[in-house]
Length: 452
Image (cartoon, rainbow, N blue to C red):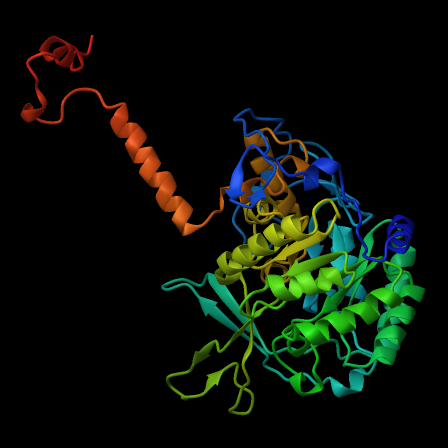
């Protein structure tokens, strides 16, 4: 944590260098768009070591897959999964996202023991007495003719536990796991004094970084908290300024997907001093209407409220938002070490690889843990290593952001396809029809259709 604190103090903009310089380097060899270039990484088909066993998953309900052996979150063989983000050293890029999997000491301890690279606690506020949850508060969307969960809705609020209790548990976790990354997710109203107090008191117990919840899609919008704050760029800029002035450790702003252009609040947060952003939080949704009762789900005493949608079905949407933010960071903050934590529907190492290929430094998981358990991290690491070995990658930095170079405009796609067709036609062998024969070039034209 000391590294992160020193880096924070060194720059009013929080512009930190992460990992090796190559992870943020831009390449002139490949054009992403007329104005942007991204680095490339060599793709080879050579395979590295495959020493980790292919065994049944340690998670409930997951299919048999490769599971990595982890000691304090670090893989014991195969490609290196460790990452450095804003001065924080993580043994692997997988982080427990803010939510039920980080709701108390017992579950966060379980996460560290299983090997998660970092843990973000469930969002805290100074006055938990205003937080009252209901039950049931979850609903599932299953694939047709299957029990496979592809969508998950929650109407759960932030932590309802007393702030002092959560502080004591965070302090205990840092005492027991001093070398692991523990991040405090926090949320407050539009009140500078409240933000300064919650930041100061969390730093006192030794958390390594903050994630600011500007994106919860339900509950307490009348207090201008969560998504209501994250959708208002003017408000967001002012609050981020308060936060970064008060904080001596890295700050990530968690973005809402419930907005026209996610890069606008992300840019505002980074300009106001945040070291990084996390994306995405859940998508505003109504899971279903029960056609027998005619009531919406999840149903509480016959009524409900729109909630947040997550799980596998949101992954394509999350990938698009992560891609846009990564492009914006490279264009607007080149070489400043602004970080990006990808979130949305991750249940396999291959899913995580997609987020990293689109520029994510770390990958967060919440619903996946609720469905499969904390042991999921072993198969996440194993699956990510298998992907890396397939392409000859030895570290996360080898391929972070590699696929960004392949995004462009539709106009450019049309141009590229037209040029490719013209090039193929120019190299075509033989005559397309009898009317193309000529008298003067008859012998040469005949030779173009000879195969040996």
